[in-house]
Length: 205
Length: 233
Image (cartoon, rainbow over all chains, first blue to last red):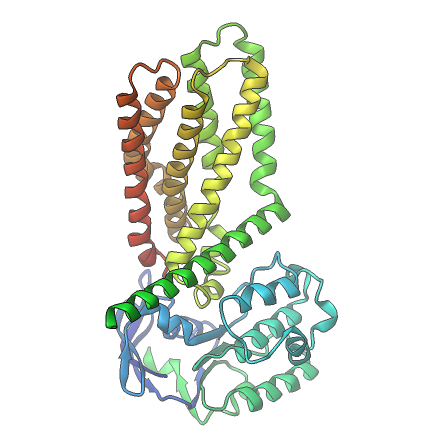
């Protein structure tokens, strides 16, 4: 899937977060959105995900040069993981997996394979709200990477991670991002080493 | 042949949507059963109010007073139970649910779940009122009908309103926007309740049943049309 931003601007109250962002995200490429804290990386990612309406400008989604208009079809092709997204936390891990897979297919065959990838198997009967913040992030990343979507959006993917978990994240990047459009919002250089193209939000103030 | 394939596509799509709605309703019931936020606070409210009325108005309860008290209780429990139903889903979990299900599935599942919840609560209120005041409604079947239709009406209205308030973070909107629809709904409900006691003509009953069903249909269609615009940040 290809995503085109045309003159995207966003304003909260009287403050412009960014102005006139024009950028093409080509299918199957990797991009990083960089900028200091509070510069609007997350806001831009929310707009790219089609969840947040920009103040002005156009955003278009297309597959092989055919523009997609149906909002739900667009949503079906996007996986999004970020620290500010909350899963249904009153579920146990097992229930959450069943709930999630009843709507969206994952790239694993069954729940055991999912436990193996996410390395959360021993917590399967624990409520997600009782997970540590690193475990929650691991779960969100697993669900996003394993979704059968053409677009993968990650915001600060390794927040709350220890060194072992960061290596696990590199493994996922290598294994599950071929043939997908990957966009990472981050200010840690190691998180977006894999992305050849960078979009600096500070350039659009 | 093309028509046949279109019809099968449409049927498959409908089944798919219904399945998703079923899953979402199951989720709502499960989460409510775990937390019991709505149920817990409402049971103490219902029992307390019934007992209070029993203590103060003993002997003064006529059938019109009974009906008024019943619907006051039902309306208050509804506002309590439903007005916060979107707070979590529209804020913290919004970017999770948005990529799983379509807005129509979300709003319909919420409406169905809330209608079930309100009907259950109204029946509990009915049971308690019966226990305390022993006032017999003449035509039980018709009153049950009124309870169900009224619950669906409350559910349609307050589910849409709670989604708007959760999105805009402005809880005054609930009171202002609710007015134009809650007044005719209450009017019809009270007429129906009165009819189930002093039923004079069958024609009257059918007319009011039709009117309340149409009002419910309008609010459901309104929800389906408007909600996709609310379901964006």
